[in-house]
Length: 156
Image (cartoon, rainbow, N blue to C red; front, side, top):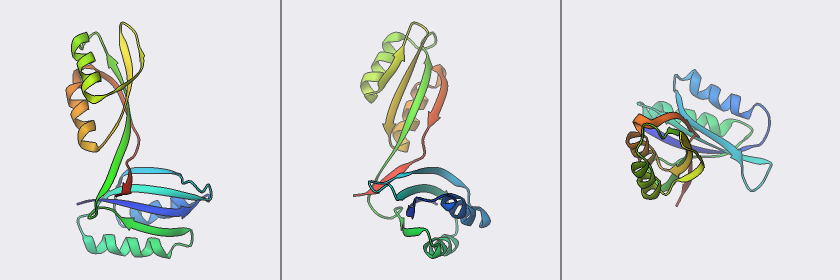
């Protein structure tokens, strides 16, 4: 089962290495990771998505996270109501996609076109994982390059 874990930490060097070390030592792959300062520059928020088949081991990792000196608080957002978003930048080959179809997708998904010429376009989109997947399937043939941020999340 995939878990979205949010961690508030002191904004210091080495904190991310210690946290990721806890997960790798238990054989968990961090599928998504986003880190940034909060409204307080001395505090950062880490949002991680991990796939954990055994709840018992994940609970143990969360308890160990709480024990790290630089960790302020830990939330497992998985079983609560939360908002999630990722940012995607796509470079699209306009020679493969029909102009009308591309324009339709731009309107349907409310995409922000960062640049466009006769050959290619660079677009940005922020959305949840399902919408990003839907967009990438629709544009699949024309996608030259795709870059995603890690997931960020906040409880309702």
